[in-house]
Image (tube, rainbow, N blue to C red; front, top):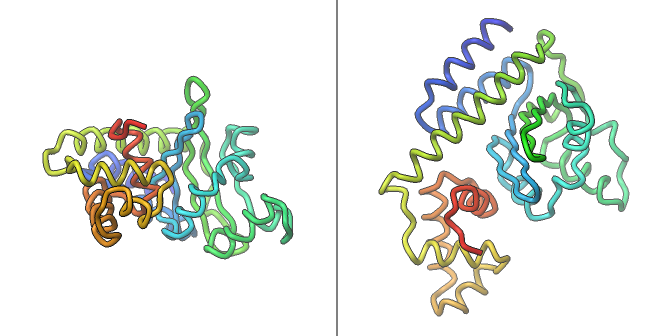
Length: 236
């Protein structure tokens, strides 16, 4: 575990873009017996995510505001320590919001995991989760709290550094039309609604949103909006 941890930190610190960070975290996740990872930063109502979860699940999670009822986040705020969890321990299938969350998480391959929470200032929080579709995963060795926090903070600052570089890169600047479509999407408008407002086709709207996603490295429209808000690219 020590060698793998040092290798992960070295790869993160040497990363030049989000793709390299994602590759390093996916590799470490597999070493620990997990399939995916998810970094989440929560500050008030604002959520920023960086993960290898299925794209449909990320969209569902953000659009349904699942961070407000996510049992993993609830447990993280209670413990502020490395912990493992299992969806098997959450309420069984039913009609309550938490039960619905459990059902959808399992359906998207999120069944058990290990989470490292870190408490930030002014009510902010950060957490890094490694997850699996299996019922249980045996971690190779205990995860030391001090090193776990170091890992989360390394991911946090590397993402901020890369985001800052991207924000000043001329190739990453959004066009007025891309910003316009993204702004309406952030206000909850559908592709068809944006097309009607802008007087363009729905295909053109989608094309502009896709271009904006590619420029900002977003995996979905909710992810695009989260990145844009974090970088101050939206005036809502």
